Image (cartoon, rainbow, N blue to C red; front, side, top):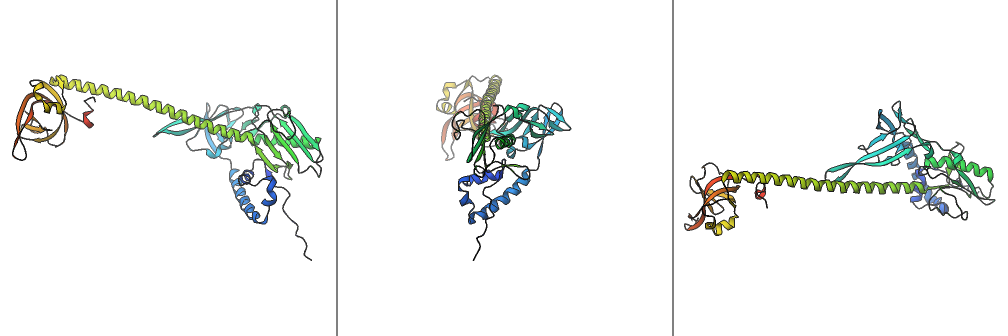
Length: 413
C-alpha cells in the first residue's frame, strides 16, 4: 500500500514586513484567502521562479548606495535609502542636509532636502525641491553615519488589545500623529513590540495562533473590533518572531506608505506644473522684452535711414506703380527686389526703373532692399518681346540691403 506523501509546504507564508515579495504576490492576485490554489502543483514552479528573483533583488537592495549632499560644513554623504523614492534617484538630483556632518557623513537630526532638475518647456529646465523631511526624535527616525535609524519612544504609544479569545486575538497600536508610520522601518519595531504585548496579555493557543492580528493607527478605535473607521492603517496578520529573531507577517500592508507616495507624486506634478507655468510666463515676458528691443532697434534704424536720405514718405510698391505722379519730386522709401541692370547706371527693381546707380552696387538678382529715391515720374522700358512699357522712374539717393524677411529689420508691419 502506498503511503500518503507528507506535504512539506508550510501552512502559511512567512514574509518580512518590508519584503518586495509580498507586494509582488499581491499584484499577481494571490491573497491569504486563496493560498490553497496558490500552493497547487502548477503554482509551485512560479513560486520558485519569483522567489529566486526576490532573493537576487534583495541582495542587490541590501547594498548601501551613497550620494554626496552638502551643508554649511561642505560635502557630506548620505544613504540613498534615506530618500523614500531611492529607486527614482537620478544623477542630476542634488541633496542638502542641515544637520551635523561627522567624518564626512550626515548625522543626528536635521532637514534633508532632495531636489531634481526637470525639463519644463522646450529645452528649458528648472530645479524643484522634490522631497523635504525633518528628521527628529519625535518622528521616530534619525540619521546616523549617513543612514536612517529608528528612534521610537514606545511610552508614547497606546497598545490596546481589541480581542482575546480562544479563536481570535488582535491588538491596535495607537501612535502619535507625528510619528512617521509611512516608513515600514518605523512600523516594523512597533509591530514587534505590539506582538510582545499581545502575547503577554493573550497567550497563543492552537486555535488562535493563525488568527492573530496587529494594526497601527493614528487615533483610537471606538467601534467594533473588526471595523476600520480610520480608512488608513498599517496591519499585520499572523505576526511571528523567527528563529533568527526577525519579525515576519503572514500578510502585511501599510496604507500610510501608499498615501505618502501618492501625495509625493501629486506634489511632484504640482511642482512640475508650477515650474512649467513659471517658465511659460518667463518665456512670454522674454518674448515681449525681445520684441520691444527689436522694435526699438528697427525704429532707430529706419529713423537714421530717413534722416540720412531726406525721405518724406514710405510708399508701397503697388501704390508707386499705379500712380507715381502723386509723389513726383518727393524723396520716398520703397521696398523692392533687384531684377537686373539696364545700363551701367540704370537698373530695374520689380518693374521700377532706378537711375544714377553705382555700377557695382547690385550684382545678385532677387536682393531685397529699401530704396530711397526721388520720384521723376515715368520712363519707357523695353520688354523682352521688343515692345515698350511705361514704368515708374526714381533717381537713386540711398539704399538699405535687408537682413531679415520682408525687411523686418528696418520696416514695421
